Image 1 (cartoon, rainbow, N blue to C red):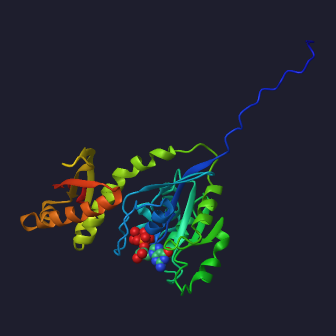
Image 2 (tube, protein in one colour; image 1 turned 180 degrees about the horizontal axis):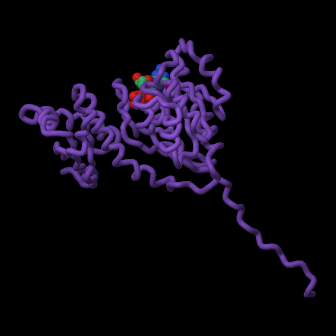
Image 3 (tube, protein in one colour; image 1 turned 45 degrees about the vertical axis):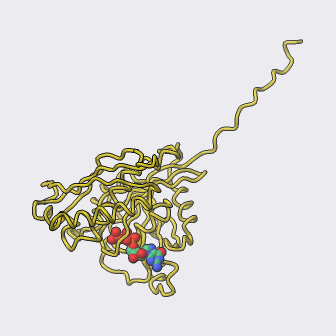
Length: 301
Ligand SMILES: Nc1nc2c(ncn2[C@@H]2O[C@H](COP(=O)(O)OP(=O)(O)OP(=O)(O)O)[C@@H](O)[C@H]2O)c(=O)[nH]1
């Protein structure tokens, strides 16, 4: 064997395909379908959908995985719900701050309804941000959407626009791919198989909170929060796996606490019963829900 004989090149494994991963946010005025869209994108119920406006209060994460990468959705920052300050520079500044760390902003609109002041405020606020903005025209399943053209006239302000229906799923994959294109190259932020666990507590808290919204009148739900203390796996008498969930509804003051408990505990039983039925359907197991109502003064502001 001579020194000059070529050395066999080791066969390297194919490098893993490049993935794109980052944070996206859905913004838009109330009732355009952000929560419904998030659920449709994530493929499970992570955010509450009720007929009452402004039910999305906390940032809720949903994660979408594709071979091309991972999108982590953070729900609408509360900032977009306020009408308090319309001064343009302040609006821009607040938008910039609220969206810090976000990679892509998806502006969801409902073209079946006229462009109103709340839409204009979101639109104006987004002029101040540097991240790519995508325009998402939702509810494409509706036969009448007279404001599609009005929105399309603004499309120069966006890096892309998409016609979707959160109901039928139409256009959603294009939207997912459009978001992915604008995310930075990098590894997945969450392991694909751990997502279910990571969101389970969120999901449970959100389901309980949804029942509070549905079963309580007026101001009470806006001054309450839900805390999920423990989710333990146990077995029922027949040895089937079940969940034992310990949670509290936090009320802003003793008056709301009394309202939530109701005469003889009737109201809290109703809420608990409705939550349990939904939790069992969502989690696919029997659920024992141990819930109380506590006062948390920090909600009374
Ligand atoms: N026809 C139709 N209705 C939709 C679609 N997406 C959402 N909706 C309806 O629009 C209403 C508002 O939907 P939500 O998902 O609660 O809207 P949101 O923007 O999250 O509202 P807030 O939480 O108040 O900000 C609900 O009645 C939904 O059922 C859609 O693709 N097509």
